[in-house]
Length: 429
Image 1 (spheres, rainbow, N blue to C red):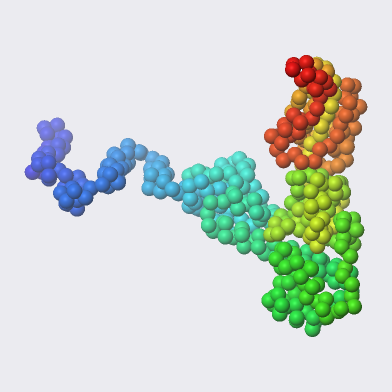
Image 2 (cartoon, helix red, strand yellow; image 1 turned 90 degrees about the vertical axis):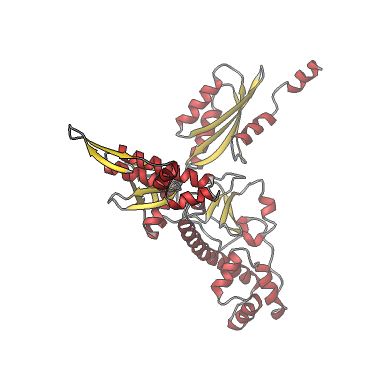
């Protein structure tokens, strides 16, 4: 029974009289009723029905239509977020989507050239996770290029696919240049002229369609120069094998790296070179050129593959002075007087270098300190060492190579001996 009546004061009262079964059908539908009857109702169905009822109650409480729409998006699409451009265009992204995902969702060219993001009026990095209702503007630069680091910043398959394709194109062009230099250098030393006839035999042997594909395979490490030369040498038996280079400074006609921010150039963490250091390049497989200090602890191992060693040069100082900073580390040995750590830190900071981390180990007589610092070039690093070396009570200052992180720095300090360490241990025994 269902009726509506009016009271004497003109108020409307709705009256419904139902059995339990009638109420269930009215509230949840006839299909729901038969699911109950057949025992096919699951927890998921219960929770969904409960959510609908809660949603209807909640919708009646919200007066602001805009607030209602925003909350509806959150509840209906829990695995999605909705952000907007400054012009009001709404972009949907998966939950956890970043500013870089947003950039590629707007347009591929925006993504390729993105440098930073402005989220709700604040400058954010490209890896910044977005939330529903954020307003996002992407700042671009024409010289910006995608790098492999970007793959760790995105959640959407569209952005990841675009980034990988761009990196492959960059790597191909880079590998062509590197491979051409490597092969030409060795051909000149071996006095082999790769004419069209010889080229065709190489193309057939290595199944490449043109010279650029051969150069790219050499630059990427898929085909070694030695294999190409071995294929050509039977045709020129009078030519002696090329002399094996043993050090990067022996090379001529190598590659000069002009751009420090080239995504195909990495700075080796095993030696942490800074601009101005004597360096050489090592062609990695699929990751471009790794730049190493000439005195890198791994230099001897790397030189066992001379075909992959190339000459590299730093940019002019006025070009690279605005880039960086570059991480390096120094060891300081001093007396253990009160305040010495603060004095040394002040002198380092006075040069404009930034102290990322410091570790110290002392006994009653002396102290060993290690500083992980950031400098813009070798000249600044030399100023740091010079200023600290002139301090009273400082015995030694030197640079150390391998400093990947704070734990490694701490291990280096703990391994350094202190005066009378052995004597103290003998007394304890």
